[in-house]
Image 1 (cartoon, rainbow, N blue to C red):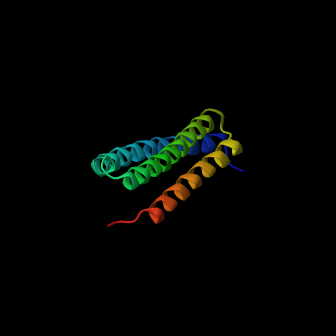
Image 2 (image 1 turned 135 degrees about the vertical axis):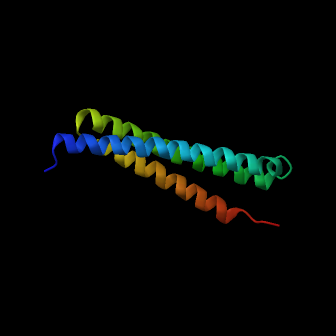
Amino acid sequence: MATLQSQQRRGWISFGAGVFMMLFVIGIWIWVDLLLSGGASRDSAEAAFLGKLNVAFGLIFIAGALGTLNGWRMAKTGHRSVALIVTMLVAFGAGLLVAFNASNGFQTP
């Protein structure tokens, strides 16, 4: 059985990983938007692709925020929230699915 201090340490690690994930996703999101925004203004297919990517990045960011929230809660109480973990995994999986479908549907000239 894990001790309270061990669970709290895991919570702080989860909190840090969630913050890192959110910052990393935001950085890549901004970079991809800057790269594709010029073409999206001229081509409707590229605009649709960029819109799907924005949804995917948003869902993955939400997963990071939920991980951060779960880590904070775990660091303070020593107990994890199964509901937050499941919701985080669903959001992350949905983001990956949207990104996969967007990349398969985009045809390059």
